[in-house]
Length: 70
Image (cartoon, rainbow, N blue to C red):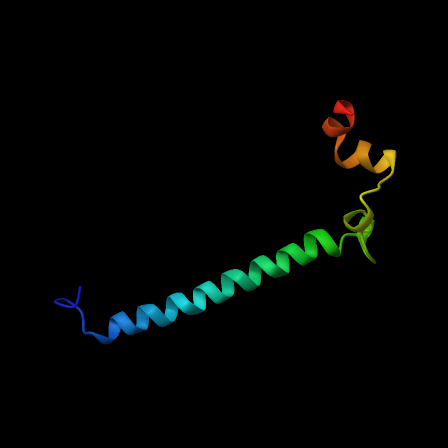
């Protein structure tokens, strides 16, 4: 590519890809927080991740296939 473009285009592409990667990771982090931790059903804290216990109603709503196999 450097036969057609100046050499600084390589550096520019590297910098742009770095910022693109930072934005992608930040977006993934924000989407994860919003879709898992800030849902009204689980807002203050989802205790299932600590003790492994959940209610039958929650299992019927969120994991009906797994509940059938139990």
